[in-house]
Image (cartoon, rainbow, N blue to C red):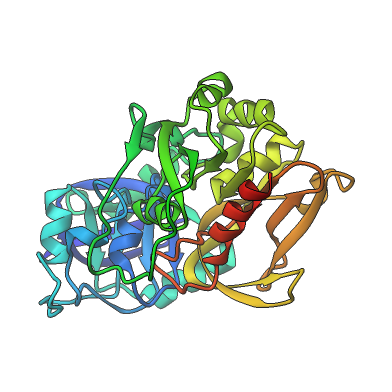
Length: 371
């Protein structure tokens, strides 16, 4: 292991050991409270622009396997952990976490006090930072972190979206025992703002043929597919910077049933006149409690976002709040009172995470069938 330093823009720094690639990397540091699923976290395109600190201390013991990847590569800017497992003992493992990050030129740092880092971020909020195995002067690294670009006002969707449309067709991997699939009856267009493979699999499982399109798609191009519904995916960065997709959604309101998650939720919110704001340290983890305000049931949900739609910014005569975060009382879901449109702020495909929110895909199917 080589010496590595993590330095935050506010002057706080940590010394540890590097793993994965060598070099220097920049990003906004966030923490993820999940105890499992580090590979799904690494390969979630919503983490573009960010370095992830895992609160669970022992990472890497399951190794890496191709079936669990949520996209073609890891998207995190850096990976911060307490302790790297020296071996991967899971029978499904195909390579070590260390080798995987080396292959994709992702820097990691281990051996730091991750509890101290997380408590600091909870107190002061997320910070821009740098991990380096080359420059080891903390003062110089703090200055570099201060001068690095942030994510506010930055459109990161254009860096993770697909380059051209494609039809998602896949034989479900044998490891995914999700029960019987509904016969595919309806066609949906899924806008890829950083979509995850298990979202596409879930749409297939619940009865949809899925046409995936880039995030810069126009309303006319979507309608040309003659879809039965529109799905708006998760994605990274500041939702206020993705104005072209907001405009597309606005033009399609009332013309197609819509289901949005995460960034898709924020796109629908803005299309209806809502405003987004940045959270102090975001929601990142697969253990976030959310209440369904209609059934009063509590879902444990998987989340990854730094921005939210402000509850009071949505037109009350058009929108009904459906879900509420029980940690900080932020908006987690709403539906349109007139049009067949609903959305949630979290990731209902449960990858990684519990299956509490699976019913939302069935709700989308029922909405289309009713229409």
